[in-house]
Length: 348
Image 1 (cartoon, rainbow, N blue to C red):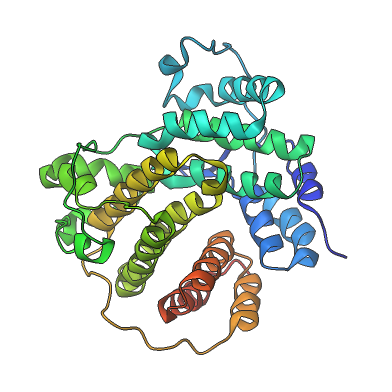
Image 2: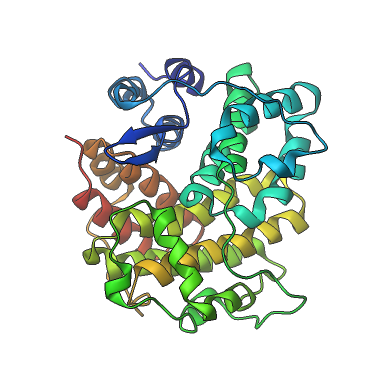
């Protein structure tokens, strides 16, 4: 029997946004993975997958120190206050229509879109897509959780947009970005810890001004995700599979937000989405996207089946994002990247 996102969210209701994995703190992918499975048309797989996934999760953090509307900046980027942020956004959404909350807070949070390796914006985007279909208390709660995680892990990368840009397409701009030497890219910490190494790469500060979203944000986003799907394929053998997946899924999340945002806020989010993906490239890759990619050996149903069979949250989310992007920009790189990830990532 097919599940609904509300059933999945009910199963995950007592879980926090992060959990311990050895010495690391990892993001809770339960709500994102469940919503992605539904988007892939695999509703029958949702509850079994959530039941298996939630075994690793921890309880939610408590709200200890309320965040007031006038002093929210003081709590920005403080993961210890994620419970306070969740309570804050629950109050915001109780008194204001969710599209208005999304617009105002995406504009505020966009500069920190790389938060928790883009998991904040991704979780927010999956919540928004389900709310766009139907507004329910569980889905509003999940939006509050997504925005809270984005705000609590808010992270700035070097560089801010200037009044003008080079106006390059993403594939062209990528050739201008300096990457860290291979020995400096090796890191056994989190993706966020790797991104901190950008502070030792002064040239990266200008990366945000290499591109211009232009008058067609959808076309710009297609160019960006196509480029970074290629980057994933060109560099997946170097051990940074998970990090490079987020160079696609992070920016692609903005596509799910865009129907509910003003053009100005969409453009701002895409500019910082580019910066986030470029940062992942600079710290985790050596090769640019290949000029051509051979057609993948599988159609959409086969690609979905392979992703679901992995039981892996990143393979599932990456496949959903790649197929969504492929539907708008039918380039073989998306299908090839999704198949490659499913071949590498397995939980059973």
